[in-house]
Image (cartoon, rainbow, N blue to C red):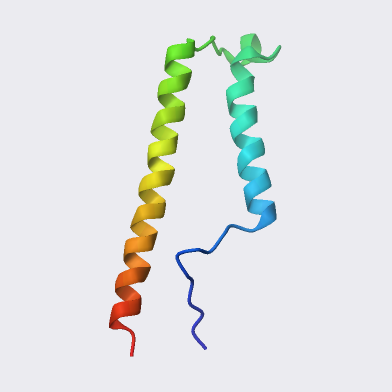
Length: 78
């Protein structure tokens, strides 16, 4: 039996929560007490905003690609 996904599928709750948690820890680490031990330095606000923009564009492009892919699959389905 083949399982199909739709363009409106959503990630599971665990995946969503863990992804957000990892993202927050990643941004927090350079400002934490562990920063010196790990050799991290502060990022400028400009760089943080640029990285957030790149991430947002990546999510947008992935979602758009997924929608186009599934729309084409639906047109060619028997």
